[in-house]
Length: 564
Image (cartoon, rainbow, N blue to C red; front, side, top):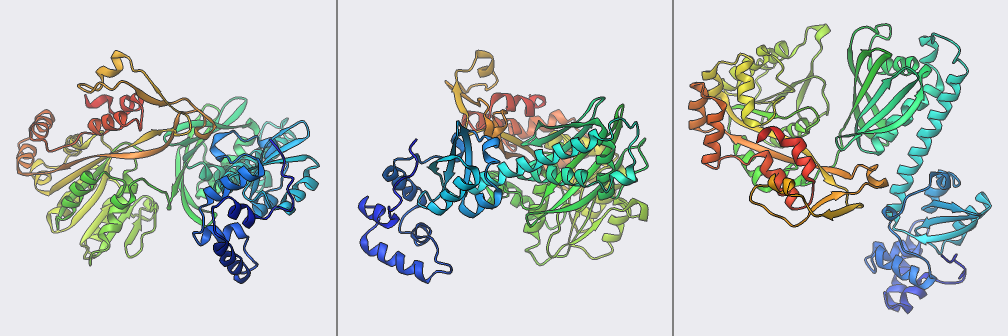
């Protein structure tokens, strides 16, 4: 791979000679460049004014300079190489080192004609520099990911080194450890890395000789750090202080939460502790308020599911349940629905534990058991506040279920979540909780069941021939190939990257009401909705994703084995 040697080559001449822009466009761009603050680079001016795309600009430069134009996702990054260039320099010049070998540093850069940048890194590293062109956004994303990983590893090393000095002690002074800078740095950098990786949870698990840190990304647990066991009490103390928990209580589980600001992103973090043989296990759930979702215009739903849900929301009163296991995204959907309803001229009040996202124009209350504010007492008070719509974070007990149903019968639209496997089993769950069948039948208007399905990693996607046993799982469908992810550095060797939501939306009609009030078995309700084609099952949506090669047959089995 040749290093850049054509020091007098001008970008405009390269593009005009290649026929990508005209002399007139070049003149216009040069004039605009002089008018721009701090004289923006010519390439940026050309792209910004749509004279050329960034991809074509980079491809033309690469061809003329006899260097590679690459995608950052195509090759692994060597963190030892990354560390040779300070982050400030990498950000300043939009470049990142990706490999080092025998005195040569391979660098991906957005502007290979920026010879000052290349000379800078030559002086800093003392190495021969070879360059490749990559897109600007790809490079900055790689900088963000790689340097956050390096900072976390450095923090972990520092914390482990500090722990070695007190390794001979059998007990750690919690009050001193809580202010220990290496511990604070370690926790902050771990949270930052978890956020950068898109993790939903951080697990801090104590064992006899180590503390293991794992993160859950796209629903899958990934090993992340291994720390000295002597650090564990210090980590627990720091996180308990942040979460407002009792640092002296180690024998009973505790729950708390705190807020963190990461790169201007407000994030709620739930803290849960659980005593184990070797100490307290900690789980931190990251509730990001700016998560991106597929199909955002339809709240992450397929168009037909969105239309079915919208018809349910036209009801002026009644109760709608969002169901699914922990981590299925039902709370996110519930919040998006509330935001959509808030556009109407209505009074909306909520009772939650905790408030995971602050919504504009909505009266949100948080459960505080110590102060006497529970779901039941909070809901009773909300009903005296003249609400049109009430959101209950979760229906957890008989009392909450009964008050919710009565609220729906007295002219309110009530939204709540429930932990069940699918839509129809929510009816069984509510009756089991003690809800009166005739009241439930007259108040229930719809149930929305949801799952998050892992998508095949696009970077290591591969197709393979299915077995007869696998084909049998798809019934009448007989595709010639299935798809899976082989596992690569982009997906942490899991074969999956990103998730998509699937939904099962049950609209309660007169027939189903009669079946609920007459205590008909759930099998009869399943038979009715399938016979009348009134419900698209979760398994049907998953089969479609498998056939479209967006997910795997293993993921389908994992999520819907109980629906058969």
